[in-house]
Length: 473
Image (cartoon, rainbow, N blue to C red; front, side, top):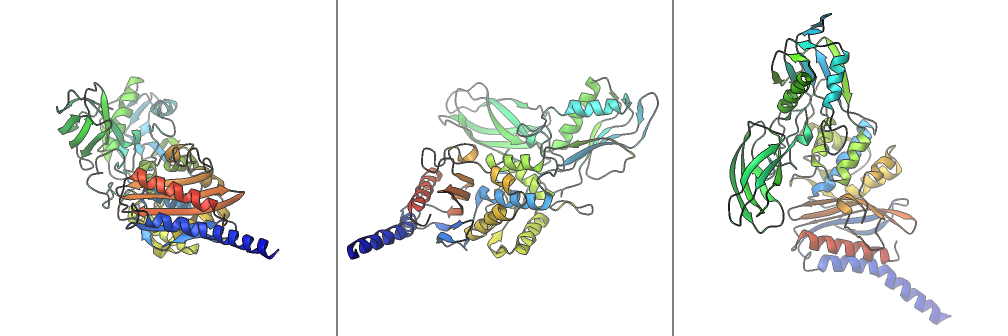
């Protein structure tokens, strides 16, 4: 009996130490020995800490910042919130169908207008139909897009120069159109040649390119566009694969409202609605007399799912800025960050461990602790009215989105709902683990590892599997 008790105690002690040994092995790996790491795993129901290392240290989170943005938006705006864009007229509609005045597009920060990701991509016929239903057959004035709901500084000043001008870091204008993205097509030609620029889709005639790209044996797009918002001169550096006749890279549209106003005018004229004036943009809310149409985006729940599953920076930043829009003030990055800080502070979270400068996590000046993440995740799971929407917005391990290959073909395939984050020298994950009929909230953030992103991901996968083997879970 005594021998059995001793064996049982030794076995239990071995299991209890296995989780601690997993953390030690993780930290001491040559790839991670000098990295900055913040790590925490908690049982959601009990709040019990399962594993912890430097959990109060704030480190760069990359795209895991999107769960702060999406959770905050669901709490502040509600899962059924919809962005609105209105068509309005400032003149009288005569009995013969003449609008004596202008037709306005009043932007409300909807990121889904013409998006390939969410919503009605081919929405302009709906707008034309609404104009027809209003009895308008000709317009003596102009088509004017009004931008006024967001700050005019459309590029976050804490993003890097390398990002600005590329599709994944588009300007966040009051009017978004076509994901604020164009495709630039090349005939890449032979090795070490300069690729020939063919066209852009959509056509943006004003764009001018200084082409410094080279055709190499690279297998993917390693080219970057450089250029400021509102400006139509772009420089292109980097490499694309040689011997491709129709290879494209993606950039951000310099001023989406200009393109939308022009396309809407053309759509009206194609439908035999005459427009005498021009397609224009005004950076103000011009008073109008008549509401012609109110166009609503898909619900925030759909937008948030795109943000998290596919790590959509564009949607994340529009959602982020919307948090500070009021009838008397425009949405801005600084105001939204402050609102998020105040919200979570009121909920009792340690916001001294949250340093947020954007909505997407693209800025390398962001910093968050594993402790903040885990406690926010527990709040969203146990107290939020949008708990199910938030949970379902996260990609699933080995299944979809940015976690499609994460923990695939392991015991944790399909059991981790989490957001990943990756920028230079940053790899992070934060979310939930479903294991043995229990739910755990976790965050693992690694900065400055001495290895590739793929290598660090493998170490994080091994760590999670080792923790799950311990008796603590």
